[in-house]
Image (cartoon, rainbow, N blue to C red):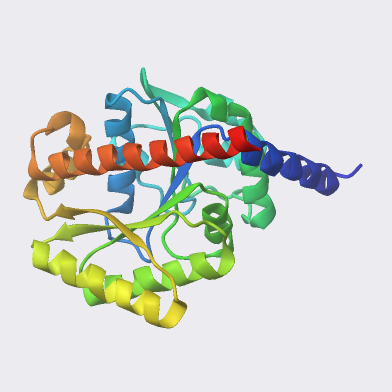
Length: 282
């Protein structure tokens, strides 16, 4: 049996097991372009979920321009490149940040980095499934944009969170990314977060424009998970290479991210309860 056939069989087994016995909740954080604060949000969401008592794994899947290690001022020894080049298995590259929080760091500048394809992400999810029972949530920090690798990743996630800013160009980028998601995946739990919002009116207007375009052109809906306002303390935490939620927990943006984390916990708990009811009935 060749490797491709073996992977296909493993993938079918993974999909069947996940359908009947959902393990941890896999959440992809994505954006239509860079500069929206996607990685910042993924890191701080992960940290806050861990503070709320959940065991969380954060994976930096931005294979060209990873940022998580920079936000933490961490010199990486093992990265996702070691997995995709088959130098190490997934569990060997996990960094334990705290009791409830673990990270798989990205890598950049590797001359031997392989071209990542649909098969690459399928293999990644097969291996991720093997360690998933250890975690309540797995957060995937996606590459910006919508290449084949990212779309395949989004199609295999339980939830997708698209990060945008209220600027018209960013709203359009979010629309295009959501269009790709709706047309290429069966994921129905898609959310948007507006970051760096100067005012409530800005974010309300941006979400209204996005929702109107999605309904009119795609006959689709997206839910607003929440809004993070512009906050100078965010810039300060990035420059200091510290986690906002840890170093400035009472800042405006930290309190907003905490609200988003609590809202996400409620959403996923309701979905989990509904899944349990369906399994009980049948």
